[in-house]
View 1 (cartoon, rainbow, N blue to C red):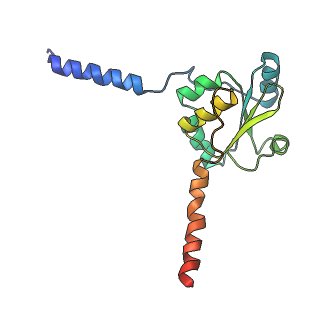
View 2: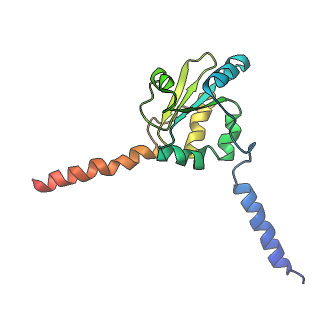
View 3: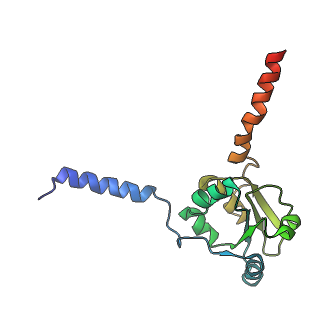
Length: 168
């Protein structure tokens, strides 16, 4: 059975468009290290640190795992960092040291251990890439609070205000 030329050309165009729009493929996953191994890798290799603080019970952490940490572009940029994954429930000492007050939180450190930047809350891959670029010295400082977590709290502030205003 022969495929009509027009159909073949259409499939070729659609296939090419799909490949061009797909995120760049990385090595498949971020190479996460525990704290001690990641800090040693940073010191020895002169790499900046990207440290993710999360917990098993945090729903936004799971969204970061699903959306952001699995994105090929984020994975590719992550290869320029020593990547450390910290379970906040297991490492209270690090939660205190880095003053973590919410999950997920990503802390970027210079190779000397000085904090360069932090992201508090969920960010999708497009926004997170800007933060990675800033931490690498390749872009402007991203806006401080554009995460979904802040937007998710908006109804908790607006609804009570409406109720109070209606009672007056």
